[in-house]
Image (cartoon, rainbow, N blue to C red):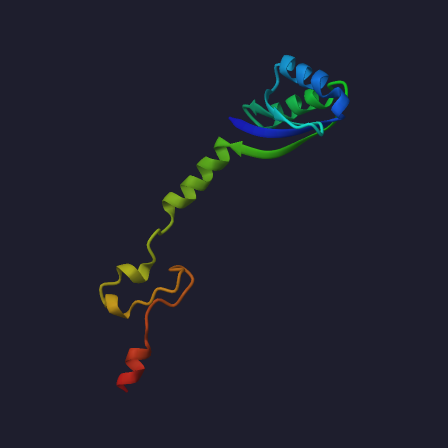
Length: 126
């Protein structure tokens, strides 16, 4: 399932007519508008192709100057991102190393990209 927000633009004088036609179209859900003629609607579809067909219906409504997809949510995309997160090492390997003392670990705000072990103590002993 995909859900996308669409910003529909019309002239202020045609606002009521376009909002009415959007509500009657059956392809979108009306949410809000402003006095400048910008209207926010959402569309849903089982895939991108279905959403694009609905976008074309919105673009064909009389007095619509433009209809642009702004934000999109795809369950497939979310599932793939969740899979990557679930299969990644959430805890850096150095934190699970039993040979490293906790007091030798230095946190610098990013555990994955920084050198976590303070080797300066080793050099001080020499």
